[in-house]
Amino acid sequence: MRELMPTLERWRNQQKRIALATVVRIYGSAPLPLGSKMAISSAGEMAGSVSGGCVESAVVQEALEALRSGRPKLLTYGIADEVAQSVGLACGGVIEVFVEPLPEV
Amino acid sequence: MAGTDASIYRQFEEAVRKGRLVAMATALTGPTIGAKMLLWPDGRSEGSLGEPTLDAVARERAAQVFASLRPERLTVETAGGPVELFLDVQPPPPRLWIVGAVHIAAALVTYARTLGFYTIVIDPRTAFAAPERFPHADELVTRWPDAVFAEVGLDESACVVVLTHDEKIDNPALAMALRSPARYIGALGSRRTHAKRAAALKALGLEDAQIARIHAPIGLDIGARRPEEIALAIMAEIVAVMNGKIE
Image (cartoon, rainbow over the protein chains, first blue to last red):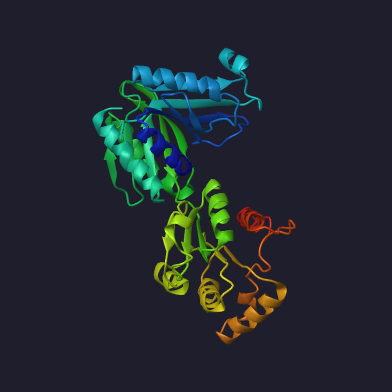
């Protein structure tokens, strides 16, 4: 989380809104530990990671949607999930990611 | 995020930025999805997950999360059905104390921050410890390092790197670090310099076993020559020690 702070500050200075994605469950092997975070700006930029690159682009789309709707969302990615098959989680595990819009500070 | 949750989130971010231990509970499902409760190690909490059972469970599990420093996922049975709860914990980062605001230190701060360390550069010489040279350090302190160490106390997670080449600055700092439980202590200099330093530390009352804790010559042997390479060798050595690969 701490490592994302300079980026969050920069985005806020640029008047961008921010969504945060957090890994909130892991089944089997997953590339990053529970609690790993990625921040997404309203311009579609990202910082940090939730899966080491496997599902990031899908999470960015969901984050932009969360910023539009203002509503958080619990997402599942993994081999059992059809979306995840197309997105792909290389290690074969399943992860749940919570995406939420951050307040404007 | 509702108004209260926004204020709680801001406090959470502030604590993380300052390297303070803090936890945050979030409702992942249910009617109050996204609601937050901030939890402190002393038992205080702020905000509400929107349901008394959820609040009670979050407060109850907080001690466990602060002990393990690992986040936790729970399913809580409430009057309105099961709700998924996430308890995030942000442990304070390990601290890297860099004595000597020299060129190697600037590169070392960059690597250390990337790896999640909180970096403090100390140098009593104001010409070296200029803010424009270290805009990326978490703290820049223009004081004598032994005085600073005596004041804050180095704990088991502290890493200390001594780089000034000035024994007036280096040796008292090392003596203080060697009397602490610091995880890593390294000092720049050749074998010959280190032999001289060891003798000086002995004269300051330190024993051979204590002096043997110093990593010197500092850094893993990667054939480093340029300051940036030496910084990389030092950082690699610290990571190896933190991961238990070397002592």
